Length: 97
View 1 (tube, rainbow, N blue to C red):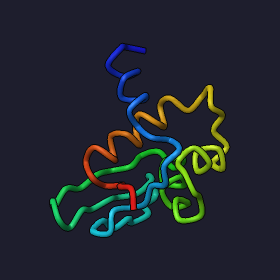
View 2: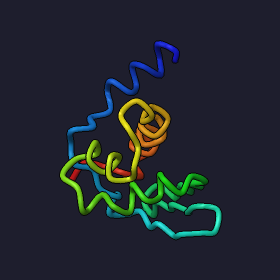
View 3: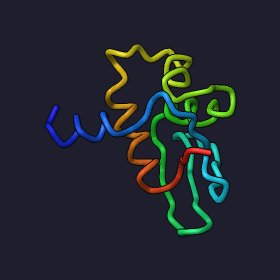
View 4: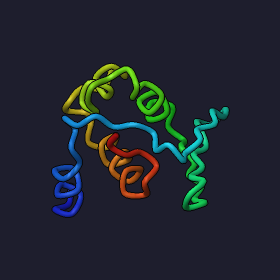
């Protein structure tokens, strides 16, 4: 893992509550899902169904760490998922309420 990736993972607050941005629509697809942000008009393709499950379960969890754990991801295996979620947060697809 590079220093830049490690820094990004450290900055993403796993203990905070996260939600799908109010201007974002999630549309499940056979490959995963599409996310469309009506404010920025950005389209994201999610090709990992576990990420989709984590995002869909956000309303049920008080923090991102528990949403990841509920998807069956151990802490030792969470780095790629946290990196993907960090990217979604950076692009304003998910946000803190």
